[in-house]
Length: 286
Image 1 (cartoon, helix red, strand yellow):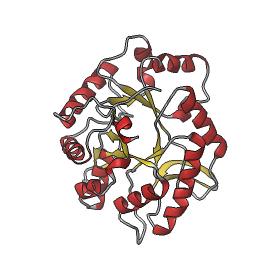
Image 2 (image 1 turned 30 degrees about the vertical axis):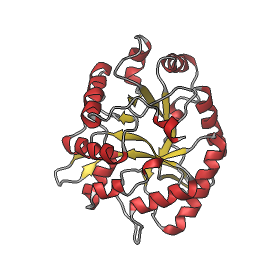
Image 3 (image 1 turned 60 degrees about the vertical axis):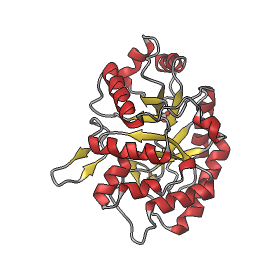
């Protein structure tokens, strides 16, 4: 299984870059790639051959879209088993998903919706997480989502997440841009949220750009460069929680590969500063 260290940095695998990644040697600035397993695990032919080629050069991380861990429907066991087989085939150690729901009784909603942060929901979620982990034989790594709606009488988000981690032994994907976006839209202190999370549970980080509307409301678009405020928050995250692998997300207005890798390198250098380490964080945490 590929080793990804705490000092590593990566980008999402996008269709725009597949040929470039296959047709050149490993890019020095790029340590790993993240993909959505749903977009690949049922594919054959040239697309699967391209993934095989890329997997020979780069470690892969899986970031799913369809688990819907927080919905009220039975878990899709067949789907989870297929994800587990895909992870095994490509020696993918990390499978992350969203702490959200995206299904109802009519099917998939194609949106990541927030789970009501009520204490009564924690045991329900923890049981579902444990069942997923039993099938994939890995920790489930859950991401804090950006959200635009809040329910009544909710627990504080960091408290809810921390208790869920404690009950389920899941791990966390800390999305730094999502914290920033939510803190501005819902008027809370981003650093208080970050420092309330359990450091040991954080497996890796996401960072991205967002769109500010005329009224000041922020949208998590992954369509722009990371701004100064999010970079500063990321520096505070590293100072408090330490280095983890960093993934730069860009889903819209995707630059050509060389430019994106340069952006990744400059961003990582700015955030990590002198905290570069050579040790494998996963080995330290085992």
